[in-house]
Image (tube, rainbow, N blue to C red; front, side):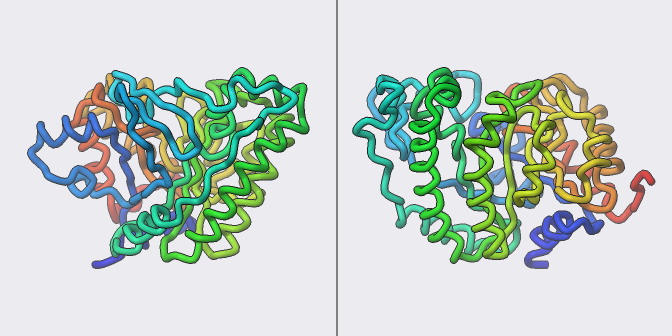
Length: 345
């Protein structure tokens, strides 16, 4: 049975119908603790039967007062809402002038030992679909150094300096990819939020100028090594979806139903990408009943999983305001529907 979960995901990405529609459920640490306390299980992902694993290029330094400094020097403070990401409270490039955005800033050296240790853990896994995660990747990395407001202004009024910032980030990531892509795993997971509830944060013009070229270069490296590209971006990418597919995206996460007409998304792009998500953590899972969760999972499998191309998943990491039984219902429904072949034609 070794590797059957991995094969299901690979087949789904290659648009083959599988015995079970694969599912994945990312958890916040607060939800994981709650789930273990309520169920008594020792490994939540194993209990739920999740098909994917991901290890990130994230190694924060703990500072005084519970704050943390990330690899690029941004300072973070945890929030009290049950999430694991937190808010940035220290931006390394905030006080630099628009004529010299980088100032004396030096981009970090690659943490080769840490990157390889993350790859070691991926290679040791013989069952799951394995992803190396580069989160806060590019646009997010730029604003984490400069602030969102300053970066958006820079994009509009100071193209030369803004390109220098993105070029430095890209150089770092291309070097990282050269190291990790020699290792044995299936996909690189790029996390970079571009969207709002309606439209792109920076608009399609500036996405094409600053962001698209860098991702094209990173995606090409991944694809040239025979690995899959998974892109996580919150929000509405409707204006650029075809272009993101054209530059190499295989799997799109999070696919928020508050934003997309899911059937239309499947009809228009379902042959060209795999949908990874679709069950809302924003408006559905915290409030739904178990029976509603089961019906929603069934709807996703019947409508979005026909012909493959679906990894059933909540849209974001599950927070502790979501009942544990709702998450169990998603996995149980996917198991029960296996081999029934009841896809809607």
